[in-house]
Image (cartoon, rainbow, N blue to C red; front, top):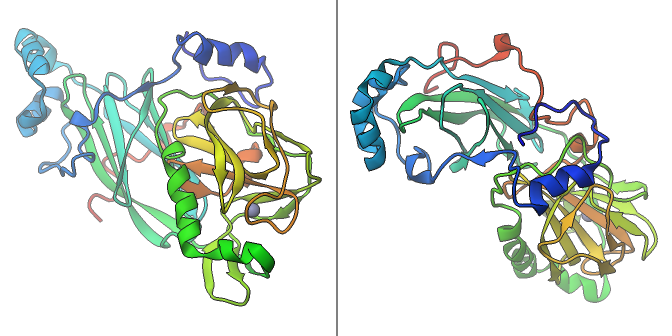
Length: 371
Ligand SMILES: [Zn+2]
């Protein structure tokens, strides 16, 4: 049964909700927006005509993108083509955004079938929930600042284009701190770029995909009772060298063996070990949102396990490149590491079910088309 706009923070029985969503294989909350065959961004296609407001107009401008079965449906239902769908309303939250932030895009598009985004060369299908499409993308801590182009496309029930617009989202800089870290002994070998790259390559497939469900409800919880000892975005220099990377998560201090819990509900997508991050576990929360837990002494779940918010999933340790026992915790959105702190704060949480005020929408008339 579709979940109707929950109010957050939710402290319902997550076990009940998650079992309904995941365990029984039914009650899918959101659906993927069809295949990428209709995605204007997936194949690098660019529209050649301005967005159309009605299905019949759209058919004239994009006939080559109709599918065979859709063409048959069109022939059988010419009367339907006269139906005019309301103009989709696009919301970008927040805008402007800052480096390291998670951006939520919501599109209210009654009657539409599919929607997608184009952001910095990547295409993102959006998830559909009744008349609403939603999707997240992450802004890297060192992403270019200033006006950046964001493409939005919405498709009707027969694959016709209802909206294609490029807008500009302003990315504001953050004054990240600079951290000079000394790594001695055997761990110094782990600073090799090839080892860092191997670590990222091994984990990327498990934190960059789009699971077309939303497994979580409400704000995330800290995964440890420990004190935060390092923040996201710190620009890091090792052993007096140049700044080559930034801190991709936040660190919690504590004792080896202390509890590490799931920040929110989801499915374990990876449990393993890399030389750089040591023992780790990644939880897929759906909709392209993942959390990662590293330097663990012990991993208590395996890939495919369904976990709920607060479940014990691992124990703190100092494996991999660590100067002492701590938990390195990341939030990853479609493969980009973002600042986890907003996910822990009610006022900053990118709630996909929030109420929308139409006066805040970016309509086609006030989108900065092509600029
Ligand atoms: Zn860390």
